[in-house]
Image 1 (tube, rainbow, N blue to C red):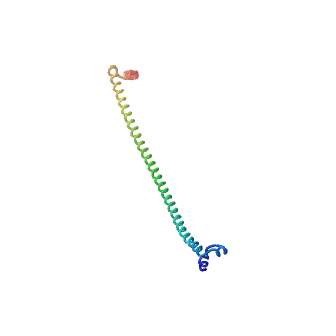
Image 2 (cartoon, rainbow, N blue to C red):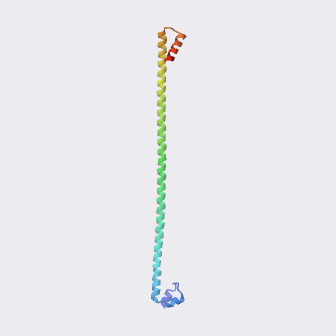
Image 3 (cartoon, helix red, strand yellow):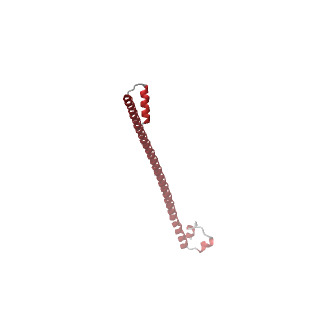
Length: 140
């Protein structure tokens, strides 16, 4: 009857207790011990799941951080290329303006030279020679 005292904590009806033998109680006791191990296994499984979840969260955060860094680098690259393009366009525009100003100055000097030559060839001096030269240059 010592087995009845030892396994009193196992829930069972009174009639069932009378039918059970010591071996049955021993078996129930072993199953109680084995349930502790699965509990430890369950705790280990829970711990593993928690650790796995933490790892997944950490990986996701790292991936998001890398994506943000990549987007930031892309934005910086776009800004840098845009700035280079603006500088290129400014340089191109200024060089074209300078070229046009130089051509305009050369054209004016040439027109002045033509006017002088026409006035000298006509042999007349004064305002009438200048007006005639201007009219000839306009026709050209």
